Length: 402
DNA sequence: TAGGCCATCTGGTCCT
DNA sequence: AGGACCAGATGGCCTA
Image 1 (tube, rainbow, N blue to C red):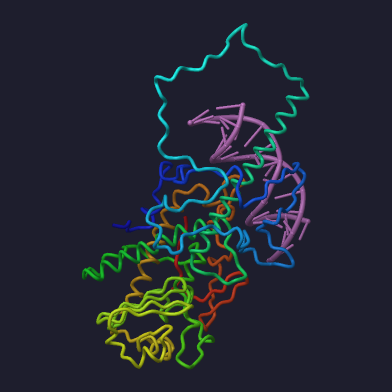
Image 2 (image 1 turned 120 degrees about the horizontal axis):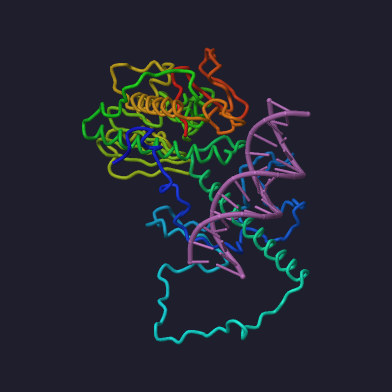
């Protein structure tokens, strides 16, 4: 069902990465972008900029809400990829071409001497060329805006980051790639658990340190920030993909079921019923909640978590080793999978080390923070970086790279 | 001040 | 002919 290694996951070729996005391309006059013809030296900001300013340091928003894509009301409305079509001012080509009528007489064109052509003066030619260039620039600008908007939508569906940060283009693509891989691996591991095969996701490789790490992936395995504990049993502050469960995973298996945290949504699947979906905006239950007990559900209807969660958190992560916590294995799976990927990729990668004028950093193989040289980690297992806020343990580093 | 990131312009190529 | 796509060049803005 899913690929089992990161390397296999990365094993794409030109055919997969073809230019055909699946969308019919038509945005010669995009609604999202005002078409203003500007000379080359004119770099006027038309009101759409990714670049942060002093007044607005946030670079997250590409377009205002007015430019928001007309997504269907809910994700469930999207049955196929083709269901999602961007709105453009130009009609989208139909899939089925009109067949030519073979009986229709062909139009006759004059040839040779009979053909009358208008000669154009150099000024006229220059004018025509200039107009073409202006139109081409306009199309290219719109094209890039569409591309950026697609990237922005992609950012929106990735696990949230602090509000004052924004993934760059290349980071967005890499993170999306890794994120998809992680989700597929998670589903596969969950399938294995459900079918009783608990060892299939362990990859045989040595864990090595000082590898390039992916900031965002580390976020998946963070430890919860104790300072956010309200102390009143409310764990709403822990919601969010980056601050899931005490053992640093988005999974949390208990004797009574599984908690899965994706983005701002936590799904509780209970062995005995009582399934629950919780988000920052509310929660919903379905089937009969029998095992948690009404008391827990009524106490914390936003984000009910089993007692194990509270125990290991309150006991300073001293988790009962006799219990089987799925996310520990899940973490090992990620760690090993990406380690294998990083190791194999680097061995064959000409850009790994300095290669001409290129280097790792240019290709994003190195991270913003050089973890390879950061050997001492804070005792409290927390670390603050300027751009991203990290919580990690030395052994909890996930190696990921595209 | 250098480097990173970005938007934009530009000319070339390919395709319809 | 014209549109889509691509990559190089350029300049602006920001940060370390």
